[in-house]
Image (cartoon, rainbow over all chains, first blue to last red; front, side, top):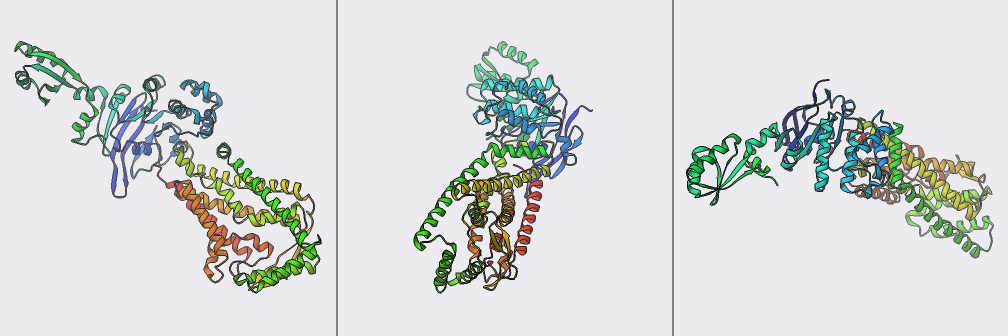
Length: 303
Length: 323
């Protein structure tokens, strides 16, 4: 089997006269965590719903492990596990009954596989309680257990850390890394939080208004957008020197912002000091999603 | 496929739907049996005898007295009088006291509205609840085709209808046997009356045992419930909210009950499903809502409606985008 587990070509969705998704194409490889990053309403969820077969694309194709989902839906779905938005399970059934319910829908799932995934998400103690008594974190875990039942090659998680507390978020993050690195799954994660994506993903697609603005590795994306904020004394002289050396992105009364280029920053600093400018503060800023978006989309803000 | 149906049944059990239905049936039954025994007492008081002939005679006189002021019910009364007279002439007690007679009356009165209502409790949210809970997203992303998922739900619905009818039958037997005794299963009942333009046609009348009659009634009640269940099932797919589906279906059923009493001159109303739900009346021999309607006609109209809503259900469900 090839290394490409999920392939999307020219995906479009038109509702009425509006084109919601415009020609998305991307490919995911085995063992990689791929982030889908965009503001609310950018089309992340619509895209994910098309990937899992809940919405029919207007045109374009989706292949999971080489199987076209519009032609071989059930075979393709055999390789896919997913949680779309919140992990909604049957509240009036116990955790175990929920898993059994979904297990019988996949051929060849035994009780021992169910026990295995329960073990994997660490839910052994609560499986016989009704889901209505679970906390959100536990539901999220049960949701993942459900998604992993069929030993999928591709795992799609829509906003997996939504509503979790900080420790839950950290746990989820390391779990997702574990699945990709140790189990060789392809994981597609959507989020509107850059920070989240940055800690979890190998590659990122930035989506805005139904289009992929950019696909890149996390490092490449971040370094090109990283900023350095300088506080200098005297500020005017400092600004003049920096302006000669690099482009100034932003300036205020007290500070100057330039881009951050690792191997050159030291040189800039030396030049300032040699010219008698006191460097009060050099603050490296990771780009806020806000900035990144303004940059990449030319003005679309995040709501 | 069996697994999927089992899943659906587990969910219905989990929602305790059958328990609710059983409770409703028991509460209503105890009310009806109590009312019935009260009525028997008051008749005894009024007529002073337990002889059914005197009682039936009295009923006929009552109806004849009301005939002049009956208005649009006139025809109905005339047929009833003739029927009672026929029973009297042939020396057959139409209301042999006992559990079977009670069940017969109870099914007769429940089939059109009460049983369909019970079925709706199950049918109306069998799909829409998955949508409102959000679990439909999990259900439709399994390696199972949408057709199979919907089919399993429909089979579960048919099973549930049968369970409801069974619950209804066995509970009413239990309660009424305790209240009225378990005799009268082979009591003779006349069936096959038909009426044409207010005239009672007795050419097809034949005598059957009460238990045969009751089985026939339950068969028809089952069919009515399946039809109403299928229509609710369609609404459950078309409408996102269970309450809206329930309301729509309820409006249809009630309008059917009202229409049946006033559409006698609106000929084409006989193709509406809700006017055709009174299958029981054909068996007992009351006048149909519109002249010329027969049991066979109503059964075919209902079957066509059922088939139509099944086609709509499956086409919509298999194409629908889930947001």
